[in-house]
Length: 322
Image 1 (cartoon, rainbow, N blue to C red):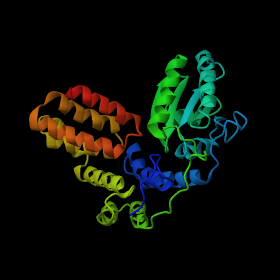
Image 2 (image 1 turned 30 degrees about the horizontal axis):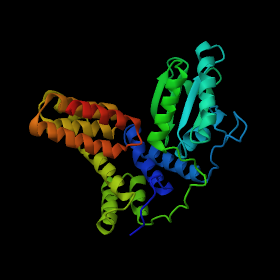
Image 3 (image 1 turned 180 degrees about the horizontal axis):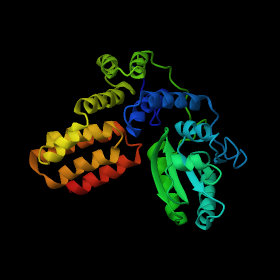
């Protein structure tokens, strides 16, 4: 039995989470899973962000990002700490109000998060890829995924709340490479079979591999969550897109709503999956309501509390119940 882990996720767990959570960004895309896994591996060997590095330079807590450096300074870095994108332009007056506020907050953060500044005029492909509709635009990236965003200049108090909640929901404020970091525990070779199955798209084999680990070690820190995620993806595949039409045609069939939510979550429509089940909870009672509630709680656990959308859904669920 491995010893209890600290509250902060260990590197192997983060990399494994990334492999599986990658599919929540879109359809189950094994190339994307592999790319995020490789980004997580690179992040483990990269130096942590530092306020001592010159502002705007690679490795700084405030860095200027281009299309050429986006992979390293944003996607890879987001496997160490959350990265906040500040999309701006020289001609934008509100940008000149917001950017200094974000830069000051990043400096105060001491490397617990990174501010990545993107000049949209100089990097139009990035702006298009990030679906920027107006500036200033702020987007938060964690483990290769967009997890929060807002548009327009906001007061410093609101900006501070945004980054505070982001850091709390992801790393809890831990700074990679800090004195509080513990030496990583040895990698568990039993995970290799599951990871290999994921790489080749064999969800059934991955499920068997994770279950085999849990049969021996029920409290394994990675396999439990990974198994629930793989089982979700299998249910999503089995439900297929027809699950949505079936659920819409039978709004009072809770089992159909659950299958539709599985399909939505498995294909990256996280908020729609949560909202579908929240709607069932709001308009039903008794066993139907409890069935939808339990399924929603399960899906919230699959996505994980580090995702801000989970916190919002939990608050909505509490409001619906009480």
